[in-house]
Image (cartoon, rainbow, N blue to C red; front, side, top):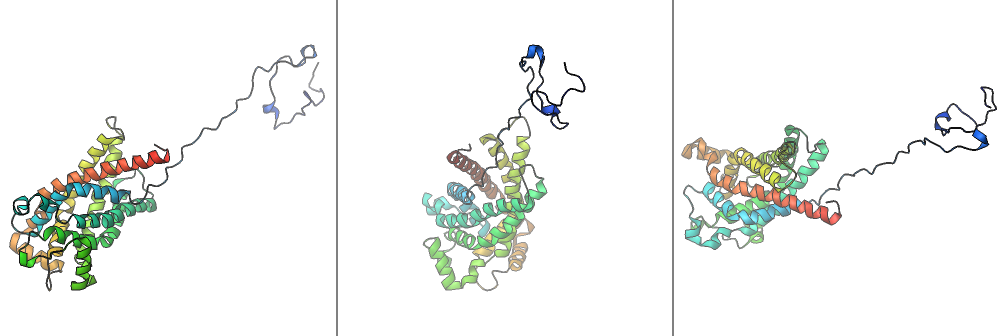
Length: 329
């Protein structure tokens, strides 16, 4: 029989104040000299696998999605540029036929694969720098958009100049047309005839417009998407993406309209003093009044809405394809 002064071994295990809790509990340990069957065993914690963060998506997905969307909505973009650049409505189909709706499509591709590719990449990188996530406040997302727009506005300016000139060329009188064959012909001729600095024509309004666009369109999409997912009515699917992009497109159109009009007019202008932003503003205010800044708002909205929706729907599907290829879908 065991007492308090019994030898210091139990089943050959020396007791310790640190190991007492780890001893098995047995009933009738020395009953008839036979070991008893354990009734209680310590619970063993099984580590649960944790989900790792997804690796970043390829940097070019945003530019690819924007190129696809812009190719579909090019006719609306063309109409918007011509309405902003001239004082009468351009009857594109009547004067140039259906093919005229795709004038300057190569300029659109150049612009999207420079400006849009850069802005989506810079926006993601800016969010990493700021530590912004899906549930971050709107001001933090907008700050990332401002950083991205500042970079993309400069990088994409040559593509903007080429795109606007190619799209607006047919609306001009024959003697004032540039008659570029395609986007690369436009780049080479601009550098040769006007100097490389002409590729940065209107960079000020373009950077301002880029900052406004990214801080409103990209940030608004992320913000609206996160808010919709917090409700019981939306899941992370096409309906949620459509609704968030529709709201983001409306916000972006209103915010960007003044800078968009100025950019188009400055880039379409030629001759001494025509690149001055203040000269363009003074002349437009004197001739048309302050509402000139919202001239072409309806075409801008009808162009930017489907473009915004198509960009984000396409981008989300491209991300799903990447996830499927990686096995993380």
